Length: 120
Image 1 (cartoon, one colour):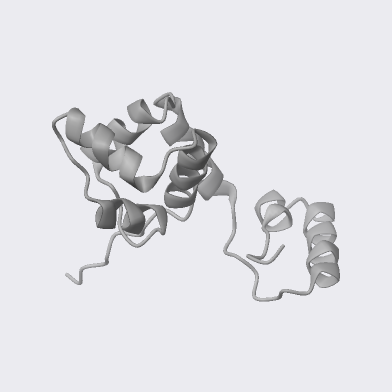
Image 2 (cartoon, rainbow, N blue to C red):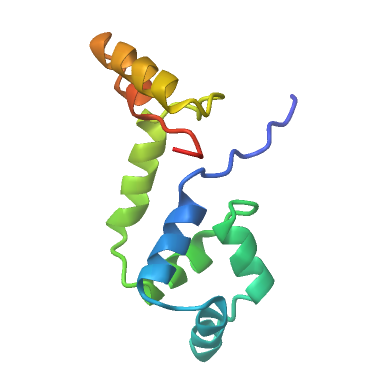
Protein backbone atom coordinates (compact mmCIF):
# COMPACT_ATOMS: atom_id res chain seq x y z
CA UNK A 1 0.00 0.00 0.00
CA UNK A 2 1.53 3.37 -1.00
CA UNK A 3 2.29 5.80 1.78
CA UNK A 4 1.06 9.36 1.62
CA UNK A 5 2.95 12.05 3.55
CA UNK A 6 1.06 13.75 6.35
CA UNK A 7 -0.25 17.11 5.19
CA UNK A 8 1.14 20.04 7.17
CA UNK A 9 -1.14 22.68 8.60
CA UNK A 10 -1.32 25.89 6.56
CA UNK A 11 -2.49 27.98 9.51
CA UNK A 12 -0.66 26.69 12.57
CA UNK A 13 2.79 28.19 12.00
CA UNK A 14 1.59 31.66 11.00
CA UNK A 15 -0.94 31.69 13.87
CA UNK A 16 1.77 30.85 16.40
CA UNK A 17 4.07 33.50 14.93
CA UNK A 18 1.33 36.17 15.11
CA UNK A 19 0.55 35.30 18.72
CA UNK A 20 4.24 35.38 19.69
CA UNK A 21 4.55 38.80 18.08
CA UNK A 22 1.37 40.02 19.84
CA UNK A 23 3.00 39.06 23.12
CA UNK A 24 6.15 40.89 21.98
CA UNK A 25 8.28 37.79 22.42
CA UNK A 26 11.33 37.12 20.30
CA UNK A 27 12.29 33.61 19.24
CA UNK A 28 15.10 33.82 21.81
CA UNK A 29 12.55 34.68 24.52
CA UNK A 30 10.57 31.57 23.63
CA UNK A 31 13.72 29.42 23.64
CA UNK A 32 14.59 30.71 27.14
CA UNK A 33 11.07 30.07 28.43
CA UNK A 34 11.00 26.54 27.03
CA UNK A 35 14.41 25.88 28.59
CA UNK A 36 13.02 27.00 31.98
CA UNK A 37 10.11 24.63 31.42
CA UNK A 38 12.60 21.76 31.08
CA UNK A 39 11.68 20.96 27.46
CA UNK A 40 13.72 23.35 25.30
CA UNK A 41 12.63 24.04 21.76
CA UNK A 42 15.65 25.11 19.67
CA UNK A 43 15.58 28.45 17.83
CA UNK A 44 15.88 26.73 14.43
CA UNK A 45 12.95 24.43 15.24
CA UNK A 46 10.75 27.35 16.28
CA UNK A 47 11.59 29.18 13.06
CA UNK A 48 10.66 26.08 11.01
CA UNK A 49 7.41 25.65 12.94
CA UNK A 50 6.43 29.27 12.35
CA UNK A 51 7.24 29.07 8.64
CA UNK A 52 5.15 25.90 8.28
CA UNK A 53 8.13 23.75 7.28
CA UNK A 54 7.53 21.32 10.15
CA UNK A 55 4.74 20.49 12.58
CA UNK A 56 5.53 21.05 16.26
CA UNK A 57 4.13 17.75 17.49
CA UNK A 58 1.59 17.42 20.27
CA UNK A 59 3.91 18.05 23.23
CA UNK A 60 5.56 21.11 21.72
CA UNK A 61 2.23 22.44 20.48
CA UNK A 62 0.77 22.14 23.98
CA UNK A 63 3.86 23.80 25.42
CA UNK A 64 3.54 26.71 22.98
CA UNK A 65 -0.19 27.10 23.65
CA UNK A 66 0.55 27.45 27.37
CA UNK A 67 3.44 29.86 26.81
CA UNK A 68 1.40 31.96 24.39
CA UNK A 69 -1.59 31.95 26.76
CA UNK A 70 -3.88 30.33 24.21
CA UNK A 71 -6.71 27.92 25.08
CA UNK A 72 -6.63 24.36 23.77
CA UNK A 73 -9.75 25.32 21.80
CA UNK A 74 -7.41 27.30 19.53
CA UNK A 75 -6.30 24.00 18.00
CA UNK A 76 -9.88 23.10 17.06
CA UNK A 77 -10.45 26.60 15.69
CA UNK A 78 -7.41 26.27 13.41
CA UNK A 79 -8.60 22.88 12.19
CA UNK A 80 -12.06 24.30 11.47
CA UNK A 81 -10.55 27.17 9.47
CA UNK A 82 -8.46 24.79 7.39
CA UNK A 83 -11.45 22.55 6.76
CA UNK A 84 -13.58 25.31 5.22
CA UNK A 85 -10.78 27.18 3.43
CA UNK A 86 -9.81 26.40 -0.13
CA UNK A 87 -6.32 26.50 -1.55
CA UNK A 88 -4.84 29.93 -2.13
CA UNK A 89 -5.63 31.43 -5.54
CA UNK A 90 -2.94 31.80 -8.19
CA UNK A 91 -3.78 35.41 -9.01
CA UNK A 92 -2.41 38.52 -7.29
CA UNK A 93 -4.88 40.78 -9.11
CA UNK A 94 -6.97 42.28 -6.29
CA UNK A 95 -9.89 43.26 -8.52
CA UNK A 96 -10.05 39.75 -10.00
CA UNK A 97 -9.86 38.17 -6.52
CA UNK A 98 -12.74 40.34 -5.26
CA UNK A 99 -14.84 39.50 -8.31
CA UNK A 100 -14.09 35.77 -7.95
CA UNK A 101 -14.98 35.98 -4.24
CA UNK A 102 -18.32 37.58 -5.01
CA UNK A 103 -19.11 34.92 -7.60
CA UNK A 104 -18.28 32.11 -5.17
CA UNK A 105 -20.33 33.77 -2.43
CA UNK A 106 -23.33 34.13 -4.74
CA UNK A 107 -23.10 30.38 -5.46
CA UNK A 108 -22.86 29.55 -1.74
CA UNK A 109 -19.24 28.39 -1.80
CA UNK A 110 -18.04 30.03 1.43
CA UNK A 111 -14.56 28.46 1.49
CA UNK A 112 -13.80 29.59 -2.04
CA UNK A 113 -15.28 33.04 -1.38
CA UNK A 114 -13.11 33.73 1.67
CA UNK A 115 -9.71 32.70 0.36
CA UNK A 116 -7.05 35.37 -0.04
CA UNK A 117 -3.87 35.67 -2.02
CA UNK A 118 -0.61 36.05 -0.15
CA UNK A 119 -0.35 39.61 -1.44
CA UNK A 120 -3.91 40.65 -0.47
